[in-house]
Image (cartoon, rainbow, N blue to C red; front, top):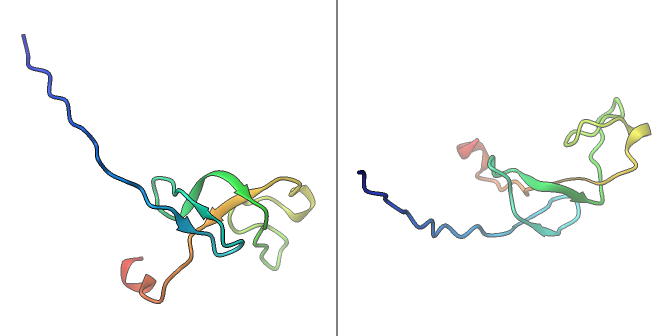
Length: 78
């Protein structure tokens, strides 16, 4: 018989702020986008496609992902 090891995960995830609507949210595994689509604003490029959820402007009748604010030290961490 083997011994079962249980590890308690005590990581506390802080909320971060969305740069589009200034709401607080929990990030996904990547640490950049929100876990679910709940932002009221889209970020369209010049072709009319949302940069975050990749939907065209004509079909964007739903919410988008929250996106974390970038700090001036962002170029060091990626």
